[in-house]
Amino acid sequence: MDKNKKDNKFVFITDEDSVSNEKELSFKEMHEKEFETKSLKDLVEASLKNPRKVPPREELDRTEEFKNRKKYISFETRIAVRIVIILALFSTACYFIYLALGSNKKDIVTYNEITEANYSVCETNNPSTFYDSKCLDEGLNYDKSTANFINILFKYNMDYSKSIPYDIAYHIVAITKIFDKDNNTKVLYKNEDVLVERTSISDISDRIFFDNNINIDYDHYNDLVTQNADKYGANAENAEADVEVALYLDTDEETTNVASVTIPLNENSFQIRKSALSNLNKSIELDNKGWNDYNSLCAVIATILIVTSLIILYRTTRLVLKVVNNRSEYDKLLDKILKEHDDDIVNAKDGYVVEATKKIIKVANFNELLDARHLLNQPIIYSKINPVKSEFVVEDESKAFKYVLKDSDL
Image (cartoon, rainbow, N blue to C red; front, side, top):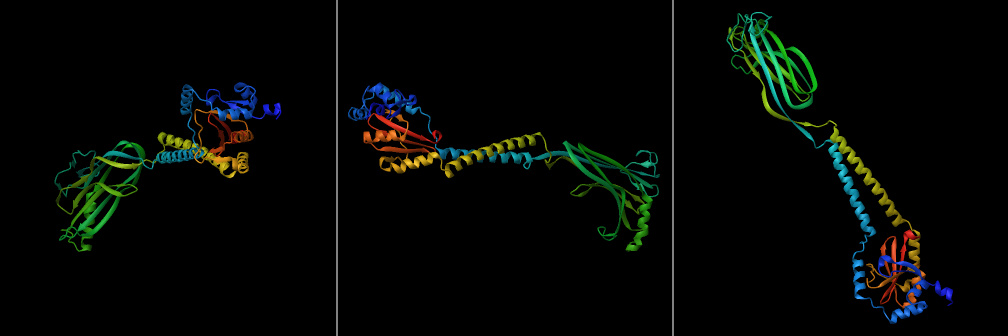
């Protein structure tokens, strides 16, 4: 072996004091530094016969350095972590979408609902006020001969705890009934007159208020009883009858009688009955279908999370497909080494770590490691670090020759 061949036989990466300070040296440079003119064979034989004893202080320093190394995370673990992150991002995005749509948000609104039905009994059909000299106040006994008209004023008031959109309507009807004298729950005749047609009211407010004034011709409804009593088997003079003037509130769900005034008919002396609502401190639950700043914020956050999860998913998929489906130059070279040098290689199934007390000498290619294996008469220990990185090691008592095969270096 001539001198030039000997000088270029090996290219090493040495570490004089610590693993992190490894340097790539030619075999000649390494020998000039440690053994001057000794050949590779002399170096190996000297290493076998006289293992270098590492001072306790150096051993301690290297052990500490080994402990402080950054822990390696396997390829499988990184993929699993990415999948967990993708699922977490996507789940959080779904939650914010749920909030943005407001499917779990309902508004609780309190309200006070009050109706009034005020009336006066008048001799004329044009009373100026309820207290006109020709009109009598409510709550009295009235004589049929002087009660020609009943003036009725309906008021409706609804106060909400907050402004809400509403769309309602109301109408007023007069319902005349003639009852069986022996059974006053049995209705023999019924007639319904619409006094105020359906009137719609819609707005966005914290209050609903309206009123309406109605004049009832008392004589007209008495005549109606007289005309129909005989037809249904009742004595016209003694028939029991009344007319109910009612205010109805119309919503999408139902029509409700919210106030009424009931006037007896066919009686010489009579009293008027009335009814009204007084619902205080009530509450209703409203679906929140409006789109506000809160909904917009939730939608933006959900969009960002979804886009981020899709980006991570795309990159993860590309990486997995590259590793699983594509045979790279790294895979081809690794398979070639393992097949051609099967007799020289021992597979470390669970990985292999060189003792911290040994000096690690990195070689530039596998052939140099193979030469060292034959000279040291020690097997090459193969360990798979991850799908794109592998290590091959030959060692004696004091040194370890290492070759690292990485996809990024090819």
